[in-house]
Length: 217
Image (cartoon, rainbow, N blue to C red; front, side):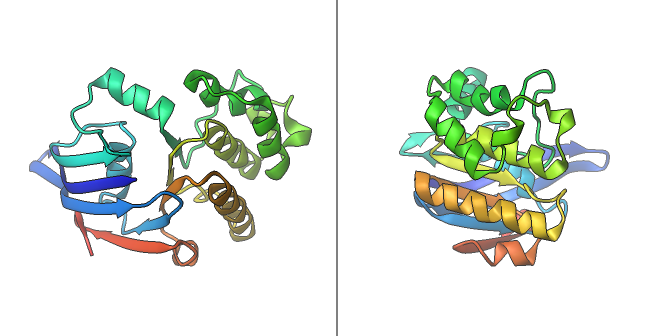
């Protein structure tokens, strides 16, 4: 489903170019879960952002469902995020002026795939049914993360990219959120690429890759 080949990315730095990615290649099948680990600054988030169309690489190719992602303009990358890719951020990125129910439906409505029954099922599974009329500031960190996951999955993406989605949660809550995410990923048949610093969480993925100094090890 996803093919990344020889991906490179460089940013300007005070002492010259910083080579964040130096030729990264990976493949991910539909329904597969993959953990991406590595030290801070190794390029994990950059790789996720490139795959998700949040930024453009300097070189290499990204292909999703046989269609090229690299080379897309801003409009094309936005359409990719609406149509095929869902991103779960560590900082949640919920819309504070919208209720929980509206936040969950937001991405699916943009994609033209809002399904009220599916959204309600996600809310039920993620323990949010009693909080749908609340606003993000009225929720705990764990509840906000569940809303972010529900919002992503409500649009039924082909690929879910999760950047430290449990980084702000305690261990028990993190395990519970990951349990729910893996179960819902299995039900939808989406691929999951999870960036994490946690050895415990990485061990639960179907496969694991380690990024070091812009290269996969």
